[in-house]
Image (tube, rainbow, N blue to C red):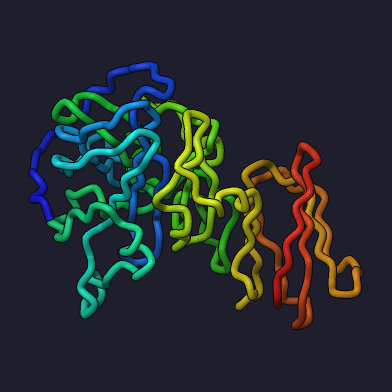
Length: 306
C-alpha cells in the first residue's frame, strides 16, 4: 500500500469553481456499521484524471477544521470510471476498533487507506455527522463536499427522518449508503448554507455495497445494473423486528400494504418524506406487498416477509 502523507492544516479556503462534467466528484459514500467506510470518486470527464496532489479530508463533528489529508498520489481514474477508497481494516483477527471491513466491501475496494486511527485525524474514520471533502492544492482548493462544514459542537447528522424506539433522532447520513443522483454532474465547491442528503443522494440501507465500482451519471456511466432498482428500497426483508424502513429517491405520497389475499392491512396517505418507518407489530407472519406512491404519481410495489 502506498504510504499516505500526513499534512496538517487548521483551515480550508473554499474556492468556488463552477463545473459541469469537467471535474471529479464523490459518487458514493458508505457509512456502515463498525469500520465499513468507503468513498467512491467518479470521473465525469473524457480523459483519465491523475490523482497526484488530490486527497480526502474530514471535518469531524461539525468542525470548521479538518484533521489530515489522505493523499491519493499514484492513482488515477479513467474516463467515466470510479475509484473506491476503503478504510484499511483487513485483519480477519481484528476485534473492536480493529474489526475488519466486511468481505463484500473489501472486494469492492481499489484503494485502502488510514490503517491507524491516530486520534481520529484521518478522513476515513468518518461517521454520520462528519463532512467529507475531496481537496487539492494542499487543502486550499475544494473539489467536492459531502455535508456542510461547521455545523457546530454536538451536531448529530443530516436529514433527520424520525426517531428510534428510545426516542433518539435518526439521520439519513448515519448508517446508510448514499449514492449520488445521476442528474448531479459536478461537485460542491463552496460550503453550502444547508445540506439535504436527499437532494443530491439516493439513500440505501447500511452496509449496501452492491453499487460500488460503477456510477450512473448524465455525464456518462460506468453502469452497475442494479442501480436501476433503487428507486424504492425496503429493509430489513424479511422483517426481523417490528419496523419496516422504506426509502425512496423521491418524496413518498402514500403507502399501502397488502396481504397475500390482496386485502389492505396498512395505509398512510400523508407522508411527504423520502424516508419513513412502518410499525409491523400488528402484522401476522407471512408474505406482504408494499405499494409506494411517489408525489409524481409513480407506483412502486415490492414484496416482503414478516
